[in-house]
Image (cartoon, rainbow, N blue to C red; front, side, top):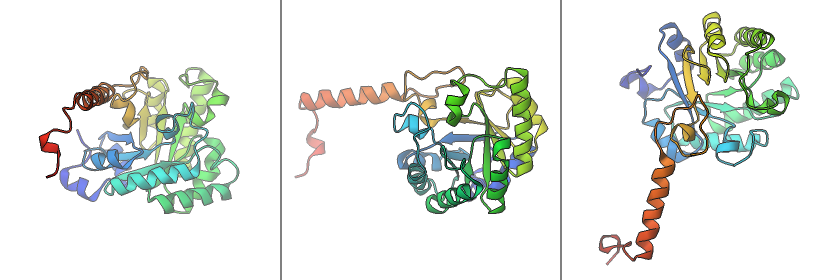
Length: 275
């Protein structure tokens, strides 16, 4: 069930709708988006929120992690998405080392990202270590979405893309970090690759909505990478992912049909030429 009616969708999902959706127990739907073509499609869909994630490093640029992604790359893609989806609430990821040096540096980077891209909010990874940063950004009227659990920018520290929060000490830390982010002013929190029971406990104990990816059925919303749920990468199939289409096969078959028609002189046909 969509969280907004057709009339509501015309005015767009706003930051006020996050908490309202949680209070009304209406799940929030979020997808990543990185380009104009898909943004146009999503702008005419029922989706509530678009995330221009630093996962573009993997999905678009072909990096092995999100670490190489820059502020300029994030602004470039977010500005494109905003142009294609003017009616949607757009969140932009703050990439690695754009908010780690100092609060002042974080403010400059976040301000530039919001100002130049037209996004509605930023997202950053981590909990207590970035409490002061979240507070400063919110004070500067920059809405902040948190991100806990598997934090891809910390992949070298974590030692891989494994589930986080299975050990009791990890579980306690993540739960405490969720409360810290809430108290610091974050308007929502992404929970990535954590046990379902932990995500359920966090969702019940914080007043801001949780958005899950690999975090089970009890979060206040869900997010997936658009390219993954559309089946554009046949080799990527983690347990949490449900593929709603197989665009890899559709695209490959369409390209092969085109090539066959070009080589067989079937295309262009009589209906494809100018007199």
